[in-house]
Amino acid sequence: MTGVPEIEGFVFRQQLTQSARCPLWRAEQTALERDVLVAVFEPEAMADPALGNALFAVARTMAQAKTALLPDVIDIIRTETQAYVILEDAHAQNVVQLLDGRRLTPAQALRLASRLAEGFVGLHAAHLVYGGLRPRSLYLVDGMEPLLPDFSPMRFEAGYGENPPVEPTGSAPYVAPEQYLEPAAVDTRADMFALGMTLYALTTGQVPFGALPPEEILQAKLTSAVPSPCDLVPNFPPALAGVLARLAQRDPQHRYTDWDEVLFDLHQAGEGIAPSGRNPSDSVIAPPDPAARARAERTIRLSVADLRRMRHERAFRERFSWLRLLGCLLVLSLFFTLLAGGLFWLFRELFLP
Image (cartoon, rainbow, N blue to C red):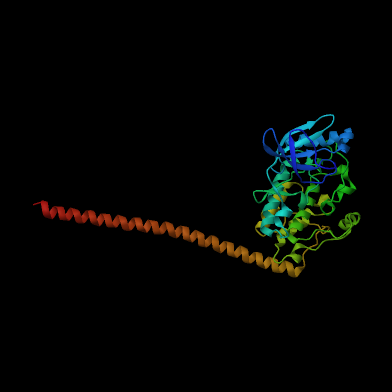
């Protein structure tokens, strides 16, 4: 589409995505005086009935999916001349713009990964694969609540619906190998791969294979490995690096079975515990250098020791505060007992014969 869309009742303000099928715009719905997001279908999607039907089937399923990862669908419009989907505008900000060259800390990455995994649970329940997760597609609401407003890369899991052809995008470093090799067999594990590579980029500041031409990236993913985040970021937790390596396995059979398993390992990583289950060596992310792993594990042990000490100190302060309150009550009780006894003695001496 060239230029700004012209749809009656909408004033288009800003284009958020460059999708070749249905770019996403931020707009004002003038009749209701509210900000909305509008995914406007391009002439290609309008002219190809199979493509248009597939995209609308994804949009309708998206409207019923129970996940906070996707914006609410307000309306789906399809006429002979126009087709568009109206979405709620949560005024989210793109994570790349928010970071502005900075990296996520491991703690921030753990929290973001957990929120994304929780959202993918609902997406998987609706048999949808997002298929295009990368830093530029990831938006944040209220600081760290993730949102994926662009539904154009989304498709059904294998066997659950008709899918549009795979759309070439600028997200080649983050796309799972099977999305190119076996697009008809793609399932939710492709989003696991993209999550691992996205977190890698956000925590290290390096785009995996980003220096290669797009046509060489797939071969690099199948034969090469990017350095472990432990080798790039001082004190990067090896447990989190292990989760990223498991997410980014070349073979989807070697990734996690489901998102609940991902959430469990993320929780364990927050406690400094290495991932559960198998962790084959064919990950796109290389294992950490032993010296870097030792330094990171030493830091984690110190952090856990500090955390335990702080918990003990807090528990002692809480117990001490209760003891101090009990002591004050005992002193007050003794004071009033002595006062009552003294008043009674004085009364007896003055008024009783």
